Length: 312
Ligand code: PPE
Image (cartoon, rainbow, N blue to C red; front, side):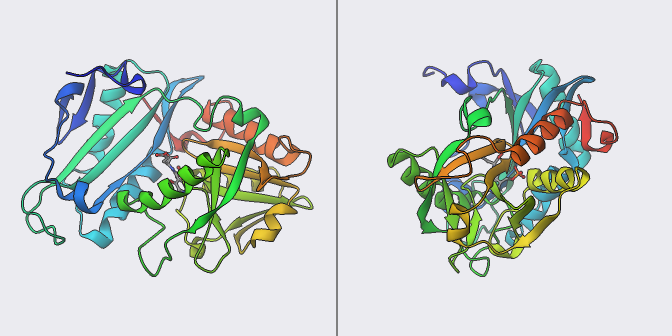
């Protein structure tokens, strides 16, 4: 067996199709349908080490999106939600993780090949491992430099973009690699109409004159759960949030503040777009307030949000 990649070094087991398997045994056939056609759905979820112990943040919402993502593809997950919850909680316990990233995935497996999945079985797996700040340790504090990608998002008339389908992510990969190749940390992707959609793995928020704007679900974005969380926190803090905004490229440059949200990215400030400095080029005051409220929430320091936690 080849040397374990650094990211997965501490992982002993994964859950796969109903049972816990050794990390090295979590294998699939190379003629798997999902590998050839991107016919899979997945989730990214975080478990935080809260003041009341490890707890999975908004697991129920992630699970709901997981099942819904399969719908257009007739990909039926052959497990009840309760079974997946139990498997995930058990996995985190077995791995003795306090905080981690959780990656459930379901995809058409190995039977016949051809676009139609035919009798390919639906395979389901769940992995969990520690994952720090998505865009680097410095990003949460000082923000990231981003560029507007030359690649557009799929239009939602071409493929459902509000769901988390594996095949969609080659578009994200093109945008991210283009940005990195040009010396930026991340990309912003416009939709087919040329308006701001989201990041390759994040939703985006804009602050102008004390009000908050984020592209609506019809702008070819993922229905992000951190996006929903940020909207709710911002409204609770008294901000007006326009959550069905149409944002032009030019408005990015003149924003007072911009930030990304995502399970992996959490709340990450954006300090420049296409070399245009945003605001003071640091984490803006509104971003700062929402970010610290977010971390207070996910680490269990805010009252009234118990429904959003699944304790391990
Ligand atoms: N848009 C896209 C395209 C996206 O992939 C994500 C999550 C979001 C928005 C934010 O959604 P949510 O996590 O529900 O708030 N991206 C996941 C995958 C990142 C990766 O590199 O893989 C994630 O954050 O887990």
